[in-house]
Each structure stands twice: as C-alpha cells, then as structure tokens.
Image 1 (cartoon, rainbow, N blue to C red):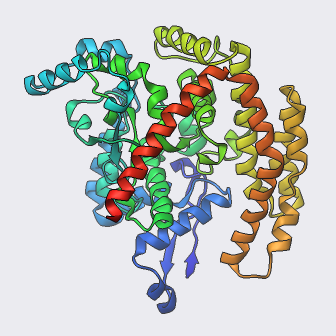
Image 2 (tube, one colour; image 1 turned 30 degrees about the vertical axis):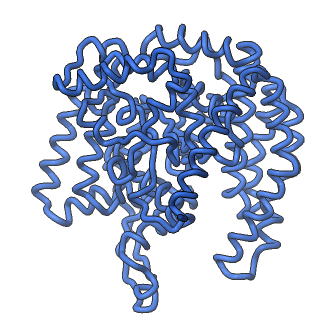
Image 3 (cartoon, one colour; image 1 turned 30 degrees about the horizontal axis):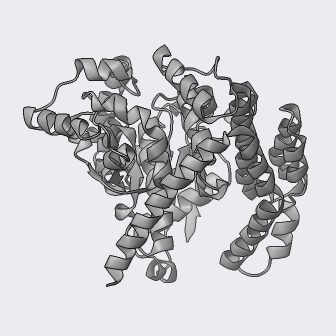
Length: 465
C-alpha cells in the first residue's frame, strides 16, 4: 500500500493533516474485501500516530468534493446554516421534550398501555430495555450519503417516534453508548472547522461495531447499541420513567463505549454513566474511544478535567438532573465523596491503560504521555493506583514483542499489557469499588446481571437446538 501525502492548509481547519491518495498493490488488494476495509485500518493507524485529525475527518469533505463539487458545496453551506441556527449539536431538557412533544395517536395509546403494565412489575427495566442495530446509527467514513444522514441524527438529543422505531425490545445490548450530545465549546479550534462532531460519532461507532463483529464473526451492521435517543420513547411520559431506570439499562449492556471528548468529565450525566457502568461491570468491558479526540491542543484538558470531577460543579443542562442524580448517588454509593473518588480513580486508571498503548514506542513518549497519569494519581490522593501504574513498562513490552511480525507483535504487546492490568491494576479498581459502592447496591446489581445472563444462555440454547 503506497501512500502519497500532502499538507492541507491549516486555515481550512485541517491542522495540516494528511490527504491520502492510495495506490493498492495487487497483493494488498486481493487480501482486502473492500476499500472501506483498508480505509478503516488506515484511520486507526493514523489516529494511533496522534498526528493531527485522523484521515476520515478530512476524507468526508474530500470525498464529497470529489464525487460532486457542487453538491459538496451545497452540503457544506447547509451545515453552516445549521451552525448559525445553533442546531449543530443542540440539547433540550427532558421535561421540555415530554411537554412539547407530540406523536401519532396509535403510538400514544401503545406507550400509555406499556406504562400501565409497569405498576407492580418486578422487572420494569427488563420490560423497557431496547437496543438499536449499528447500521441505524453508525456508518463508515467512506459512505458520504450516510454521513450526511448521521450528521442530522447526532446533531441533537431531541428524538421523535421515528427514532424510537429504529430500536427493538431486547433483553440486552452489546454496547451502552456514553457521550456528550453537545460538542466541546472549542471543538473547531482543536479539531478543525471541517471536523463535524456528529460525523465523528457515527464513524467511531462503526469502527467499534466492526471490531466486535470481527471478534464474533458477525456483520458490523448487526452489533447492537443502547442510545437514549432511540431506546427511550422521548416526547412521552415514559421518558422520565426510563431515565430513572438508567442503571437497569447499563446492567443489561455487555460493554460500554465512551466517546471520550476532553469535556466529557465536566458533564455530570457522563460522569454518572461512567461510574455506574464500572460499578456493575469489570473495567475490561469499558471501551474508550479517545484517540481521535486527544491531540496536543486537548491533551492537557483531559488531565485537568479529572481532578475537577465534582457533583456540585459538573455541568447539567437542567438543574433538575443534578437533584435526581444526587439522589441516585446517595442511594447507591457510600457518600458523595466516595462517588467522586471512584469516578476520578477509574478515569485515571482507564486513561492510563489507553495511553500505554501509544507510549510504548519510545522513552520520550512514555515520559510525556504516560508519566503524567502516574503524577495525577498521586495528586488525587490515590497512591495505591499510582503504585500500580508504576509497574507498567510499555516500552519494554514493545521491545520484547518486536521482530515477530506486525500482527503477532501487537498480540504479544497486548498480552503483556493485560497481564499487568490483571496483576496490578484490577485489584486496585476492585478495592476502590468496594470502598465506594454500597454493599446492598452491589447485591441488587448482581441479581439483575444474573437475570440477563440466564436469558442470554436460554436464547443460545434455543439457537443451538
């Protein structure tokens, strides 16, 4: 695979990233099922280099221009109009959605009936649980038509009955998607004017779905997500009920993917979802999508955001949410301080794990990328976590895995990283959980997880028969 690179003007918001013009050798072409396959690989490789926006950020614009320059201009003009109208990534309070919403009478009746069946139900979360397939909410960077559709889907948290119909009632979902609907205030400065937050979400989720599909032998389109806009009946009174059962939905998701922008930990809902998932699941089931967002202009913001996690100071679109979340925290956690310490400690730990995969390329990168997280662990008063991080040696792991081919080298590196995680980091995280989450809450969580596991086992048994 030969790659020719040209620097794009920084005034166009591309941060001098690379414009890729691929020439695929016959052997490489024969080994790839389609061009999106190698583009996907290239996007991951480019993101890992931490060198400006990933290839897709500019590809989405370049592909539009290449296919039809006039249409591309119209699309971009339409997007600029959305930005001026303030609807690019807008958020609306829950009460306003219900109060101002409307839906067809048939759906109103059906949802009213569903709400009436919840009284006295032993498992209301199970009744309300839904999931949406990846093809409805995600797409590859190369599918410019779908990118435009995804732009409008991810541009606001306001959902309609059409969005609700994208999901189906299910016992569980593969991923809970945790993210901030609103983009960071300085998004354009950090990512570039043409990097659309909504498109990045759709493309990142497609990569996540593709990875899981490869692992399970599925099509990426079949992977399922829990996303509030699709899985909660917005504009109906059931929406408030569903929000109160967010813990049930988190438990019924096998994993959580976090679209971790640099302002993620400044949002109280995001912090709550992060901590709640890690209270219910093993840390290895948390997948952080951060490489696209972490760059020189945002790196320090991650380091500053985590120590500032605070129930009182984290932002809420509606202050009623803060009241509700504080009640949940009192219900499930030993104290508000315990909740904050749990969120901070797990955030440092999981960010360090992610950064370790990048910092193994050189001693310089280890010092500049990984060591700051060790210092941060000390700064937030979690010396046991800092000591666990001190046992990480990604540079040595990389050297010991070298010379065995790219694929095998990557496997060996991750084997050593996982060994370190299991031996040093996991015990610290388990201890932190036990100190932070109320024992009775953990018992309730265990019962719900058992129900989900039993249902999944029953489904697998029926499928095998």
